[in-house]
Length: 209
Image (cartoon, rainbow, N blue to C red):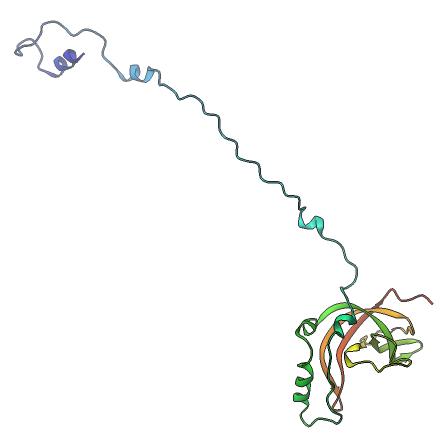
């Protein structure tokens, strides 16, 4: 093969020194012949399947969500679970300082309940009554203020106003009131009158007569 290639590259004829008169034999290698040669192929490799995602036992969030009716329950076991020292009698000269002093006694966990909606159970003491319905009342931990017994502590009642909407007056039976709770000392005419206020929206499951 190499002889034929060298002959093709030199001058024509036999005048080249050392040139052989024997013509080149064999077929020239062309591109098609190269292309037709079989190309060895690698043995097929079986792909490794990706591991299946782990299956967890937790269902989707929507599946575990439960429906609730009304607002979260809140009791006096949390609202009255601390001691509160009442200020001395007499209207203070600095009302702002007196409010700050009173509010400083309310625990932070109770202050965090401010401006949130709850359903709170207690005993009703009507303050404004019209035809057996009330628009303003105290919701108390027990009935001591209504009847007899120990005087309630100031963190054992909530002043409730219904915003003009009247609800049935219920006495001597616990009721649940839904609404927005407000935490903070309030004063009237210079005197401390409460720590909790509530915007009452409705009475839940009122007792049957």
